[in-house]
Image (cartoon, rainbow, N blue to C red):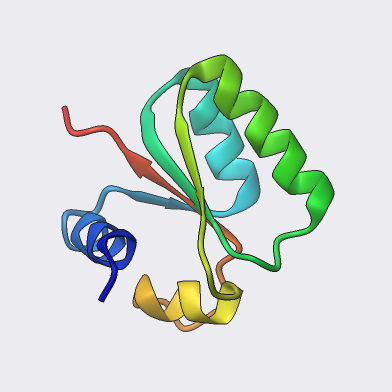
Length: 90
């Protein structure tokens, strides 16, 4: 298991994840996230928007090597997940 998968699973256990493009974008703008992870099949226009806002907010962003189905399974959710945000520990 990669470090990114371990990090995601840990955040799920601690209930520190935000799921979905609009919710993650809102949290990026408020600066409450430490990391954004997106699936490799997220549409390019959304990726650019997230990358732009993440740079402004100084938030790390990582591309998950698998698709949204796999990201959903790792998050223990019964549906596809294109993007998640991991909240800062506070």
